[in-house]
Length: 421
Image (cartoon, rainbow, N blue to C red; front, side, top):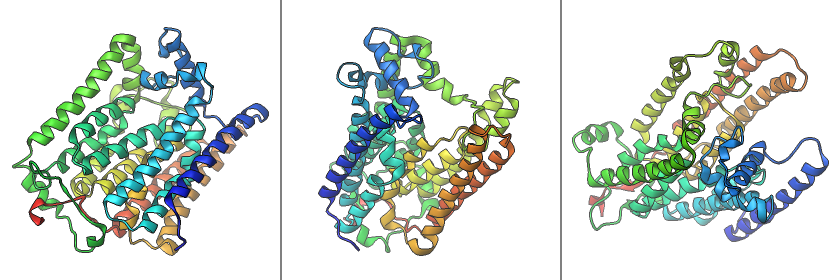
């Protein structure tokens, strides 16, 4: 295996991202197709409105927390690319946190560097921040929460969790596995939890069924209550403050909109075609919410089976959540790409065969979808049905990846029971 130095890798990644930001400025000025993400212009407009004392929700299609617009205020008085540098810094921080988490889990230096490189040089990830998308900020917070849990810093983990759910509602799906993991078997007063070491991965095992049965008799513990109260308080304080400042516009755009969102525009979701066909006839609330049923069932099964192997659980949850969502865009893929390097050392899948099949099938399903999307968007052809079939194939590809990861993963609980010490 080619030897890599993580420090050099991180420096090169930073220079590469700076170059991409400058290139993006050139492309925006000289080519018809813009490099900058359309959301970045929305962020910038919303931050300008905040700076002038107005509501960021005066900018149509701004559907995020006001905190995103707030941190982008320097776009107006330092440079318009401030946010791109900020998001790219968060992108690099994700790579650093991946490396640090793998250090704590005892991964050999070469392997953990290659795992970090899987994030730092993934085309989906290094373009997302340089184009001006805020997702790297969310990804870095999620990894920081995981690191806090591993270091038994429950207070920080709870505060940051409340913040990240306020910023982007989707991390709410991680609440149950985190709560289940805070078990007295692993967390005992005055003792730091014992992390499972990578070298013992073959001997570690998870008896999820037995654990869940025991859990029913010992569900309420002070650590679980503490995490729930602190994270919930953080979320409600931030949300209450934003509601006080911006009223129902904030509550609707940042939260309620995403619960009942129906997007008739083509996207990777299997639901888009139904929404497109029925968009002129206002969908009822039950019709808007019914898509959450498959998501809920899949999430519950994954959590009950893999909660103790938290990195694996979060990865599978996120892939499944995105695959079954009512709206699926390419930026959502970053949500699980930041978790992928954390499970690679425990995966026995050979890149030459099954690994390559997963990669090519997943990318191939996207390319197939994009082909029909191109005919619809740029050629004006009526290929909505073909595009929907492509969405079904993409869902099948995601399902194949999920099943393959589970099949070839050596499940290892994040923590060892304290009695082993």
